[in-house]
Image (cartoon, rainbow, N blue to C red; front, side, top):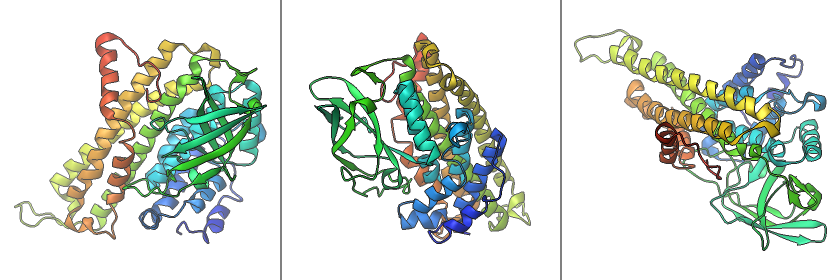
Amino acid sequence: MTITDSATTSLADRWRDAPTPHTSAAWIARAREVGDILAVDAVERDRANHPPRAEVDLLKAAGLVTLLGPRAHGGAGESWETAYKVIRAVARGDGSIGQLLGYHYLWAWAARLVATEEQIAAIEELATSNTLLFGGAVNPRDADLLIREDGDDLVFSGRKSFSTGGRVSDLTVLEGVLDGTDTHVFAIVPTDQDGIVFAGDWDNLGQRLTESGSVEIRDVRVPWSAAAGFVDKQFQPLVYNTLNVPAIQLVFANFYLGIAEGALETAAAYTRERTRPWPYGGDDKGHARDEWYLLEGYGILQSRLWADEALLDAVGHEISALLHAPREELTARDRGEVAVRIAAAKVRIVDDGLEVASRIFELTGARATANAVGLDIFWRNLRTHSLHDPIAYKKREVGAYVLSNEVPVPTWYT
C-alpha cells in the first residue's frame, strides 16, 4: 500500500489494535515497519513533491512523534539512544521523512535544552498529549529574527531561508535577538497563525519532502513568560544549553546512515532479481549474485556501513547519557569530547554513504539507471543534506582533538 492521503487511514489502522511498544527494540521494530511502508512509493512521492501531510500522519499513528514525550502524557518516555535508531530506521525507507522526524525530536527537546522547569513541563504536556509535530525557523546563516519588546510581549519579525517542518508542523521554534542587545531568545509558538507565512519554495535536488523552504515571520507575539529559559527577563545559562548542536549533528549522521542502508538494500534486491551476469569475462556465472566482483563490491560496502553503525551507536549511547542526566552536571569538557566523537561519526558516514549511493550503480548494471528504478534518490538525498555544513570542518575538529587535545568551542555549528 502506498502513502497517499486516501490511504493514510488504512495504514494507521494497522496499529489500532496492536499493543503499544514498551521496549527500545519494539519501538525500533515499529520504526522499521514505518520505513518499509514509506519505501514502497518513496520515489513517486519524491517526484510529486507535495507537502508530506500523509507521511506525518503515519508517523503520528505509529506513535513515533511522541517517542521522547513523558509517559504521564501518553508518550513513550524513550531515550535519545532509541530515538537515533528510530530516525535511522525511518530514513532507510524515506530519507526526507527520517529528517523530518529527527528535526522534530531535536526541536521537541528544545525546551529541555534551554527552558525553565515550569516551561519544560508545560510544553511537554502540550506537545505529547496532542501528538504535535515540531518545526524550526532557526537557520543561523541568515540574519537573526528581530525581537522588540511591547509591554509584556516580545514581537518576532524577519525572514529565514530554511525552516524544516514548515507547513506540516504544528509548533514552530523561533529564535531571534532582542533589539538593541546581543540577547538571543528562543520561543515555541503555534505554526498555524497569520504571522507565519511559508513560501513553499523548497525545490532542491534531494530531501524534497522535508518542507525546508523559506518563511516570513511577521510580528509574531510571544509573552515574556514564554521566552525559553528567562526568569525576570534574564537568561539562566548552562553548558547543557549548547548540547543542541552535537545532538542534531548526530541526528544528521543517523538519517545519513539510514539513507545509505536503504540504498544498499534496494540495490542488493535489484541485483538478486534483475541484474544479468556478465558473459564475456571467461568466468561465466548463471546468476549475477555469483559474480565475484559483485560479491566483493557488496562485501566492501556492507562492511563499511556495519562499522559506521557501530560508531554511531556508541556515540549515540554517550550523548544520550548526557542528554538525560541532570542539566547542571554537564561540563564543557564532557560536551566537547562527545561533540568530537560525533564529528568523527559524521565524517565516516558522509564519506561511506556517498560511496554506497554512487557505487551501487556499478553493482546493479546499466539498466538500473532507468528513472523507473529510482536508485538516484539515495545519492540525491544524501548529497543534498550532507552539504548542510562543510564536512572539512568536522575533520578539522577531530584533528585538533588528536594533535592538541582541543575540543570544539560551542557555536551554531560545533
